[in-house]
Amino acid sequence: MMDNFTPDRFADEFDATGVPQELRGWLSRYGVGTLVVKMGIKFLELGPERSVATMPVEGNTQVAGILHGGAHVVLAETLGSFSAALHAGEGRHVVGIEVGATHHRGVSSGLVTGTCTAIHLGGTLATHEIVMTDEHGRRLSTARITNMIRENRHR
Image 1 (cartoon, rainbow, N blue to C red):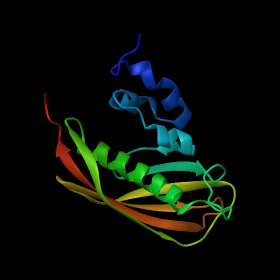
Image 2 (image 1 turned 180 degrees about the vertical axis):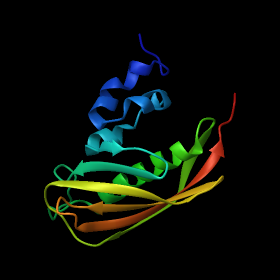
Image 3 (image 1 turned 90 degrees about the vertical axis):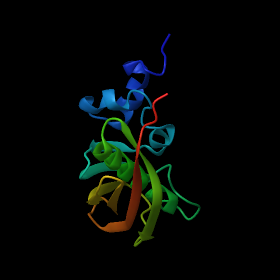
């Protein structure tokens, strides 16, 4: 029987999304979230100042056959929140307080890459810019997320 604190509880989820071995202990309490798995997001790099992940267009399109605008934001918020949480460190957690995106061009197939770069890493706020590009390096959208950093409550 596995409980919420068993490190192997999310092993399949971590394998599917490419979570580096050194971060699995940190994520073993909550995993990466079912939406990340459903969207097909794969982490290539995870850090407080820079994170990179890919997401397939297929399965994440809107009625016109292009990548759904909300999918752009899911990838952006995932990368920004993970980066902010890594910055916050042990004993603290992050809560998204603002996210916005500008869509520059549509894409109907292939793989989208999100590159997250820190704009501000403070003691109470972390802000990141996330740029989504297609397989040819063309910018598809630009997003920004701000996370508030909070102390964990001990019960």
